[in-house]
Amino acid sequence: MRLADFILSNVEPILVGWENFAQTIGAGEHLDKLALRDHAEQILLATARDMKSPQTVIERAKKSKGLEHSNEAAALDGASDAHAVDRLGLGFDMLEVMSEYRALRASVLQLWHDSAPDADERDVDDLTRFNESIDQSLSKAVASYTKRVDQARDMFLAILSHDLRNPLGAIAMSANVLPMMSHDQAGIVECGLRIARSASVMERMISDLLDYTRTRLGAGMPVNPAPMDLSDLGRELIGEYRNANPDRSIEFRTDGNLKGRWDSDRIRQAMSNLMGNAIQHGSPEFPVTLSLRGEASNVIIKVHNGGEPIPPGELPKIFDPLIRGSSADHAKKNRPGSIGMGLYIAREVAKSHNGRIDVTSTVADGTSFTIRLPREASPRIGQPILDAKHIDEM
Image 1 (cartoon, helix red, strand yellow):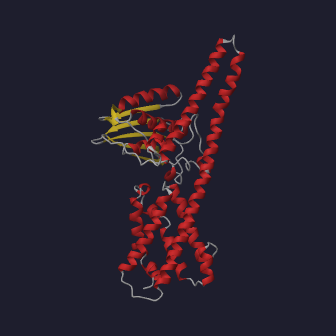
Image 2 (cartoon, one colour):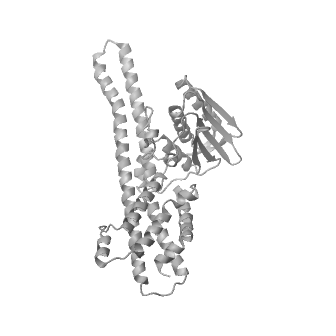
Image 3 (tube, one colour):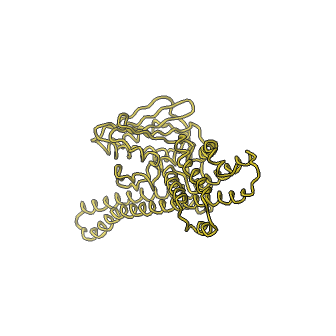
C-alpha cells in the first residue's frame, strides 16, 4: 500500500499515537482527548490529499520555496495555522509544538514500515512528498505561533508601559511640588505618602515582571520551603483583605491538618493573587471565600467568587499573561500594581512546589481557583539558560 493510502486507512491508530505523545508534554498532561488531538486529523487528511495530488517538477520547486498555493496546500496551511494558535492558547511552547510534528512524522513512518508494504518504485517519491507536506505544515505552524506571540508580547509591553506611566507621573508630580511646600508639614507628609504608594505599585509590577522573566528563561520560580501552618497565613491574609475591602463579604474556612513544608512568601503571593483576582472580577453581590483543607498527603487551597463566569474560550489560556483576557466578552481589568500576571505567577508557585492549579467557572457555581500542594514537596525548578551568578542577581 502506498504511503498516502496507508495514512488514509490508518487515521485512528496514527491519531492515538499523536494523542499519547501530546499527553507526555507538560502542557498536555491534563487535557482531554479532544484537546490533545486538536487539528491532528485535519492535518493528516490534508497531508494525504496533498501527497496524492499531481505535482510537476516546477510545482515541486515552487512548493519548496513556499510559493505553491493549490487547494490541498491551502487546506494543510489552514489546519496547521489553527493548530498552532490553539496550542499556544493551551500553554504549549514552540519546541513542544515542533516535537509533536517530529513525533507524528516518526509515528507514520514506523507504522507504515511495520505494515510491511510491498516494495514500489514510487516509494521514494511518496516519502519525499510526505516529508514536504509535513515540513510545510510545520513551517506554517511555527510562523503562526511566532506571529501570535509577537502580537501578544507587543500588547503586553504596551499595557506595562501604560500602567507604569501613572505611578511614575504621580512620583514626578509630588517631587516637583515638595520644594514648594517647606511650610506645609501636612502637605509634605501627603506628598511623601503619595510617592511611597506609587513606588509600591511600581515595585509590585517590577516584581511580577521579574518572576515572569525568570520562569520564561527556565530558571523556575525560586522557593525556600520551611515548616509552616497554612491556617495562620490564611487568617493573616483574610484580615488584610477585609481591612482593604470593608464593603465586600470575605469568608474564611479551614478543615483538617494544614501544616507542611512550603515557601511562606511564595504561598502568600499565590493566595494573594487569587484573592485579588476574585475581588476584582467577582460580583459584590456574592462573597469571596478562601477555603483551606488538609488531606492525607496534600493541602487544598480554594478561592471562590460568584458573578459572571469566565467565558469557556478563555479557560484553557487563563494562566497565560500574554493571552489571558483577550476576548471582547472578558476584557482585562487590572487592579493597581497589577500587569495581568497574577494567575500566571500563582500557577508557577504551585508548580515550583510540585503542585498544580485548576479553574472551574459556571453561571450556577461561580468561579473557583484550586491549588493542590503536596504536604512535603521538594522544590522543582527548571534548568536555567543563563549562568547561575546572573540568575541569582536577577
